[in-house]
Image: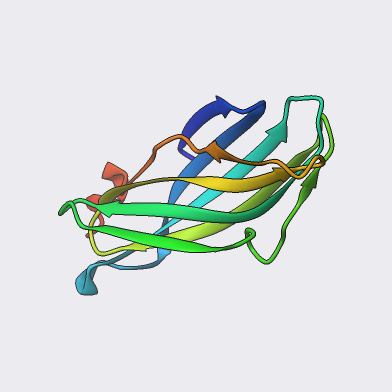
Length: 133
């Protein structure tokens, strides 16, 4: 993993690491695949469950796509105090750089809904791969 991004809000910490996937990319067709790993940790004293997420994905041309859906990678993890959940996913882009940000919709054990905002995390093709193209 090349870059790390962190945010802390509503008693949760979100750590994101990104990397470029050279083997799954096809630059001739302007298809660049980036992988990201997210670690979510409940730093508070109240249990909560992740219900859904919303992503904003911006490419180097400034075009933004919005992706929303239930859970993350088929899971709606429950976070007791001190617990973490880590998952990996990917983001295809038509450009060699881009960025992504969003939030997770949560509900605590008292039925109160809240959001945890992610950091803005960036994608870029490292110079070593640009030289191969």
